[in-house]
Length: 144
Image 1 (cartoon, rainbow, N blue to C red):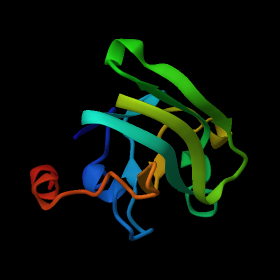
Image 2 (cartoon, rainbow, N blue to C red):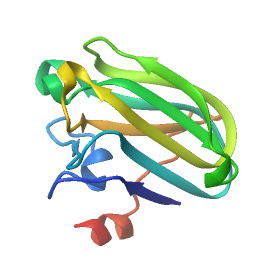
Image 3 (spheres, helix red, strand yellow):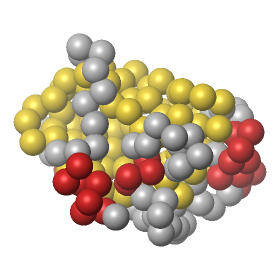
């Protein structure tokens, strides 16, 4: 599995995106839209994507429009879910229900026209209701 972020600030990257500590988060460092690209090594059934968002802490950094795309190749990604959020708090579930090699999460807009985004946690749930994006120790070391 490979995960790429469109941008991130120092100490607010991929490791923080997977942290269970809600004081840590992915913090983007570029203009919208922001992307999380996930490539699976084998065909993977994705049941849902769960993002933890905290408007009460992140204000204008909180996403307001998010689109999820899935596909067999990067070139064939298709939208499977598009959601407009109003001051979200906690875990937000995006139903995917697709088998794919590629998954893309796109932040299209933030609250109050904010530029950068905060996402407190990302989970991708398979058809057995298990989180399939457990960050291995080797990946943690590579991104530190």
